[in-house]
Amino acid sequence: MKLAGDLEVGFSDREFALEKIREWGERGTRFPQVVFGPEGCGKTAWLRQSAKLLREMGYDVIYVNPIERIVDLDIGLSDLRKRLLRDIQEVINKEGWGKILNIVIDMVREVMRLRRGRVAVLIDEAFQVIGVEKSALYIKALLSVIEHPPASYEKIVAVAATSEGLSRREIGRHLWAELRPMWNMSREGFKELYDQIPGEKPSYEDIWMVTGGNPRLLGLLYSAHWDVEKVVAELIRGKGVEIFVTSLNNIEKRYLFEAIEDPDTLLSRERLPLLNELVKMNLIIDNISGRESWYWVDHPPPEKDPELGIGRYVAWQTPLHKEAVKRVLTKLFKT
Image 1 (spheres, rainbow, N blue to C red):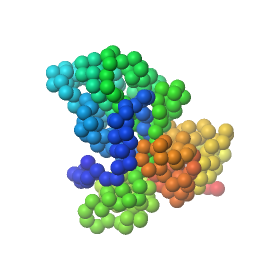
Image 2 (tube, helix red, strand yellow):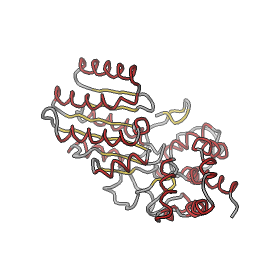
Image 3 (cartoon, rainbow, N blue to C red):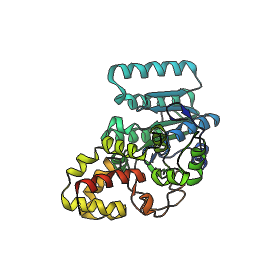
Image 4 (cartoon, rainbow, N blue to C red):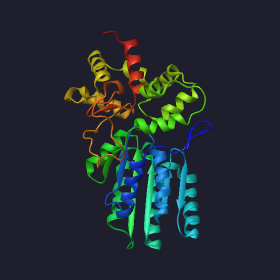
């Protein structure tokens, strides 16, 4: 996989997550599986590897990533594949990528009707493109395909991965899917990735403490010649942290200071609006209570790790996300 620029690295860690895909492939998924986790934690690399594994298990695979403008169809009938790709291109040309999931549902039905075997649909980061309400409706439509197929079929695996917190909440509210969190990489797996990067670099422990095992941040640091200050500044600008913090009153800023030390403090009635905004901005992940292996797609985070910004129920996406907010707060609000 491409970590940064022209730097190619091998797929690391995630054996437990691939085992989850193998398990789903062997029995199919009764409900769509919505996998959520921090931006850049490795969901895309895992889904692409999962597509290969499912092909080896005899599945026709539909993989769609609207953010990266990728549609990959590995379907046994070449004529059907050509026709579906043509239909997709027509939809994109006329209506853009926002309508792509409509045709994905039609594709799944067509593959079921003609092939009557095993079909997998893997949707990567589409919710940011189509929005909260449409994301929930899409998952409902996918569940309808599973429950009311156009023809008998052997098995289906349906997975949608997202970093977008509000859509995931809306989907969970309707019980149309099973929600499965994925966290940043484990220490051992992240070390494998770190060791593949050539040249001089900071110590592994230093990199671990600022990234928390997030592969995308590792790539950003490599591209920035390991300049942590530059990456933090880019996070502040990219996330609009200064504007957000400026919009808060002094009580909310105090809540935010306390959340830097312990994100679980956001779980109180008066602080929930702040939590919701931080989730919306992809700065924080909520709904991570419980560390049972069956709930997590891969190895769960520690029960609690203040240095990495991980609470029992709520966590900063990475230590650098926490640091970006802390820098702005310290600058704009003196306690």
